[in-house]
Length: 344
Image (cartoon, helix red, strand yellow):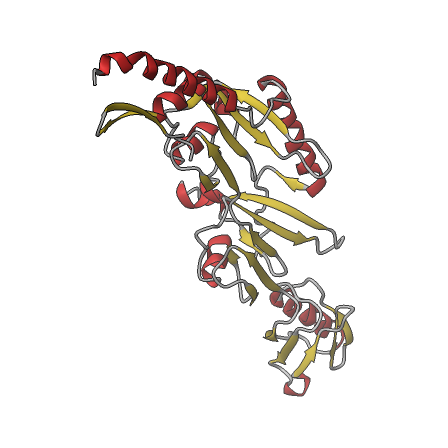
């Protein structure tokens, strides 16, 4: 059989396949906004989140004086008190719920939020006033009940740890046997003001601390602090990429970097239809912005830092699908045209 006579039939088949592929394509996500508006919405949401969570974007956890990190006494702590000049005044006493201890001759003494050395000085002054000419008082904290450090989140051993002395953030991570692989790039420290009782949240850049070695972020951790390390977020890359799937978010990850993690664009990708879909909060419509490959190459979209639960979807090109799926097979009767959908 003359294969040249079959050529028109094969051309018709190619045209038919092309038509079918084109008709079968549907835009998965329709854009809801343009790039400029999308960036503005992202900035506004960041400000709203920060205000709602009362989180400072600047690491502000720092030492607060000469005794920063020294244990502050609180409810339930058990103290051993010794007076060198008079052993009959030696005693063990527990801090009450109102912050007082009961001391021989002196009665109730307020020691809440004082350090052991400050209590020594205070008791010495009280004894000197009415009882002992030059007293020497020592205070030992036998049981620490009120000022523990709580470590939660993506750490190997979360839990509550005794506050023995001055600790910094890396020391606390070591107490918890280190961070897990899925740990995010930030840590949150919740600290209660000893005077007002108001809790304040602080944000620490872990990437700058651990990867860059910036010890300015290795803040002093005080007794009573709660340290939370959230898991890294994740994004979803789907559509015309080589390895669609779920990927962990690295710090400041861009759309381009996520596509690279997914193996790059497939041969049938529509370079001018790369969709970024963002969850804007409960009850709010997801925002969809369409990007072109040129936007990624030129750096125009580099300011689009990915957020948790972002979806990157690359639409397919009808012609790209055709040329990726069409091929030639050598059959018993001669040459034939075949087509396989590359998305399947």
